[in-house]
Length: 263
Image (tube, rainbow, N blue to C red; front, side):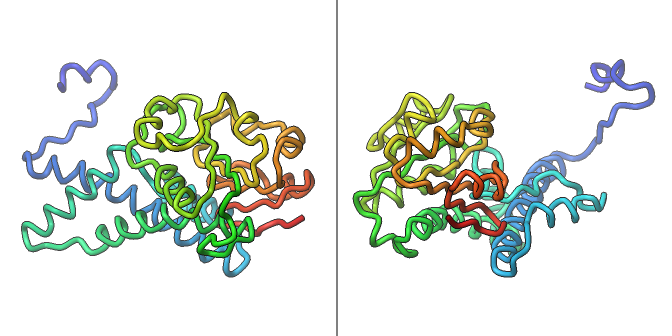
């Protein structure tokens, strides 16, 4: 391996020789730390909403400190995919098996799971249905993005799945669109309506929820979007749009960790 990498570096390739247990823990600990950063900024986002701060500015501010760095400080609906959930679960189990519980990592896993389910409450509140969504029965919610991140069809641990399950449980009709994940999503969520594109998805909807920050969702024709919706309610779980822009277009706009706009 060292010889393979040698031509890529003028001095010495960044190869660390360790024991097998150390190598395994390096991998698990790295992903657990990244998961902790995501969970931390999500909880800071909740606090920002209470005190009137902007989580994006907070993240940028602390990210300028090179001891912290700017990566993995994007507030949202929680992490998913195959690596982070699997690796923190493996690390938790390893700690318990060796009588060395990892309480911080255990909390990260619990907070992240709770956050995914709590996203449905945000939609309910935005539509005036209260935290339990009692008044939402029969309404239509458009979900934009199903995969756990853009540019993949991976639905493993995707935040969209518990969000949709909770909305369906309270009697909401869910319409959904994802540029790449529709085939995989149909296996997990066969009961929802799948659409041709973003505008087809929002047609007649009482609210649109941006769950995955696909590039095509970042530049929607907002005027067209508003005209096709039953109500101009957008819940942006990825902070794709600027609140002042959405307010200017007449949307009731809800984002993560930023001041809410009302029209």
